[in-house]
Length: 192
Image (cartoon, rainbow, N blue to C red; front, side, top):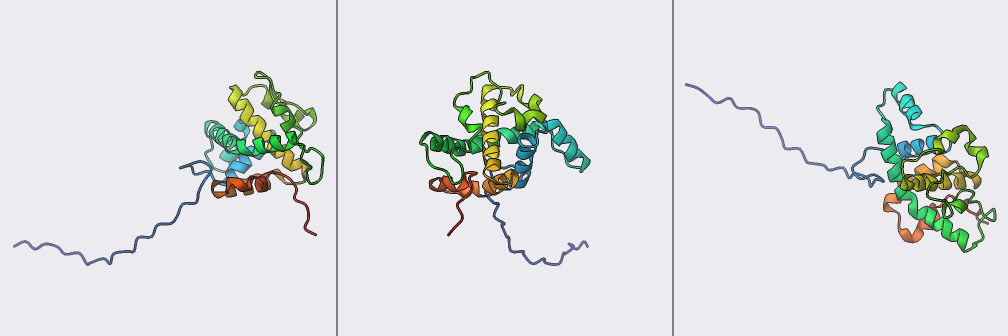
């Protein structure tokens, strides 16, 4: 007759679920480091997204412009509360740690006309001036202004923009809103 083939019993493995860390982009695979690299490359180094796409491709990484543009939009939306807080501090004339008002671009956010491109200080943005000619929509222009404001504020406060943004994006998903000031790109006074 026929005999059924028996397979040796395999001990059941304990199912282990690794907790997925909270992320800026739900369900996305972009790390805070990648997001910070894209933002600082675009807004500090003035590299257009097509160049970032080529840089990534040289390293065998597929990072399309449309994906980067999506990341820029989502990071911009995520950072809105920080810009709102900086603008509120400016309007309240709060004394800030080392300068009277280290908000070169944030000052103009509330005054930007709907059809205005962000080019408030031509010195730092001169290499990438063409990057600011077209945003696609008013909302995209405001998101770009927000990101640019925060990164430039970090730089003016002696913070390295990439390091500040990466740290902020790592903390943000679980950070309490009541402590938002701690994530602003301002130099902290040295403890005495």
